[in-house]
Length: 119
Length: 106
Image (cartoon, rainbow over all chains, first blue to last red; front, side):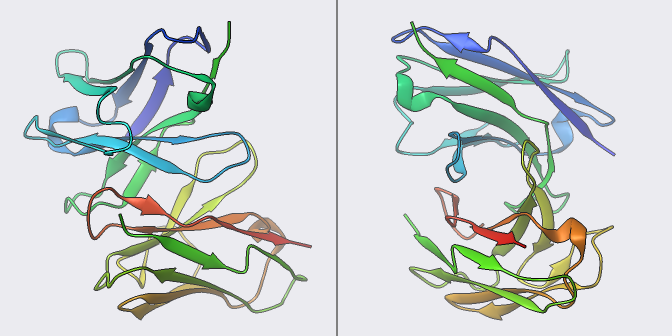
């Protein structure tokens, strides 16, 4: 079974860039589509964007101007960069995998990482 | 964007109860609807995908139904480990969106 583990700074200053990594084990990152999803404390889930196994990306329009998702196949890692962060970007950030059939449901999730935006 | 509206936002229930949660979409989804369970401090867990397909390892007391814009998640006999939050999610079109959640409480 594929396992995912997010990592990165837990505290980011306002106006700076949030950078997270998701390390995939138990399978090749090239075989699936991958997503970033976030959840502000006590609130609902928000899809940030995805990386297709082809290398193309799709982003939530609400974040598109600030988001970059990329893959390092040599390290089997997915990354997220979110620029010009504010307190509204404080959330638990998850990476998640689509199903084997490519459907956009999230079959495997990382444990999540809390990122707080504060000076 | 497709808006997903869940009801109720919370439900009080007892072990053994039958619980039904509804999710309404602002436009038709065909069958592109999933349900997740989330316990405090944990990542969501996929229960049901494509409206009614049970994810591997999920107990058969969970079931999903619906079509078009209205979908339901049913827990046939609530167990202690089922007290959690439940979210629906549409996989029909971008941006992918989630419902606001339903908290199942004692």
